[in-house]
Amino acid sequence: MQIAKLLLIYIVSCIQISCAFSICLFQVFKQVSEMEQIESTVVQNLHAIEELNENDVELSPQINLKEPDLDDPILKWAERNIAEDPNNKIELIEELKDMIFERGECEPHRMDDAFLLRFLRARHFIVRMAHRLMVNYYTFRETNPTYFSNIDYSKLLELGEAEIFTVPPYVDQNGRRLLYFRIENWNTSQFTTDELFQAIIFLINAAILEPKHQILGGICIIDVNNLGAGHAWYLTPKIAKSMVAVGYSSLPHRIEAVHIVNGSKLFDYAFGLLKPLLPEYVRQKIIIHSDLDSLHKWVLPKYLPKRYGGIHKDYRYNEWLSTVSNNEDLLEEIESYGYTGGKDFLKSL
Image (cartoon, rainbow, N blue to C red; front, side, top):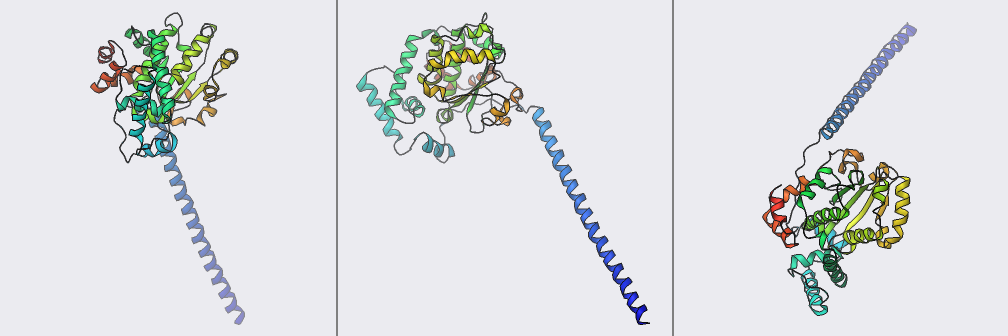
């Protein structure tokens, strides 16, 4: 009898353990199922995001001429990185004015604070360097009048349609404007080097009008895919000098980096000839990428067009410039650079 009782207790215990195990197992399977559902939802959401990216959300090109508000984080960045201190900014502008008058090395067509501020920002608020940049700027204009006057604006439109240069409506992860130069689209029999410089200087001058661009600087991506002998022929000392002037020494802006993609043996050879002609500080800004993964370490894919492993469509710079035509203040600024007919050209876009 005692044995039967013990046996019954044992059987009941086994049943209870089995039931408990079944319940636990059910809970585990339930949790796994729920996790699978969550994972499936996440995957669906990711696919939806990818699909959204692939469908190219249209971005509206914008040019903002307004100085950042005092509580804008960009001013904190400016204080840390380019020595823009709101407590002495006006004092440094006045110091630059005094230096211009005292040295008499250039005769600026403007002396307002906003104009001088561009030169100070481009040279980290070191007054003597800002003054040297201004002297370089006016010297460059005087020695290269074809880059600034008698511009065939129809050629600017053709260059935009050819997508030799493009300025997208988006910026990179650091808020910097991007400029693309696709050399394979340059038909050397259709566009002269002077016309290329006219276009790029016009674009830079438009970008300089944005205070945020003055502060943050810009990024240039040069695609040398299908570089031909006809292109390499133009990499002369004169062109190299103009490239340095436009990119670094003679316009009130900063190019923070030049990324070169889709290189070739011909490019390596041509760049090898060009490199000794470039100042060391310019060479340090040039990054040659062996593949797109290398580029993505510097510019995240979400801020790049699809052709460079990103998510955006290609934009012509005409789309960006057309924004200018809607801003009367910006049109007046463009005219102040000496672009005769520039205002009418932009209004026609």
